[in-house]
Image (cartoon, rainbow, N blue to C red; front, side, top):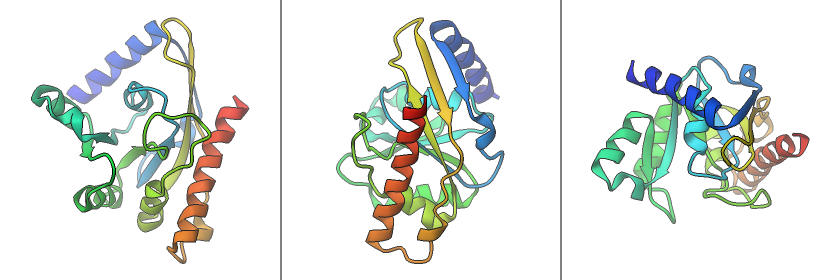
Length: 191
C-alpha cells in the first residue's frame, strides 16, 4: 500500500520536474523472473526505472547507503539490498538468485557504477540470468536529470541468451555480458 502510494507520488514528481518520455513498457513481463539491465548515469536511476512499472523492482545498492538507519530502512522497504564495493559477497549473490527464482523483478547496472556508455559490463547480470532463466530486458536512460529538460527511459525487447545457457563457461559469460551491453548501447544510439 505504501509502496504504491510512493510510486504514484514519484510519477507525479518526475512528470512535474522533467519532461519524461517512457517507451517499451510492454516489453517488461507482468510476472516471472525478470532482470532489467540499464546504463547508470545518476543516483536517481533506480527510482526513475521503478516508478513507471507496475511491479516492485529490487535493486542492489552500495552498502554505504544503508549506514544511515532511517534511510537504510526506507530503501530496504522500497526493494534495495546492500552490496559491498569491490566484490559481491556470497550472501548477496544467494539473495539475488533467490529473488529471481521466486519470480521477482530485479534491476542491475552491469557497468557496476555510474559510468560512460563505453564501459565494459560486469558478468553478474549475465550470470544471474543464465542461472535462473530470468528474462533480460535492456533499459536505456537518456538525459541528464536537469530540471524541466527532456528525460527518456526505454525498455527494450528481451535479450535472447539461450545460446549461452548450455555451458556457464567464463567465455560464455563474457559473450552474454557483451550481448546485454550491446542491447543497452543500441537502445541509447537509436534514441
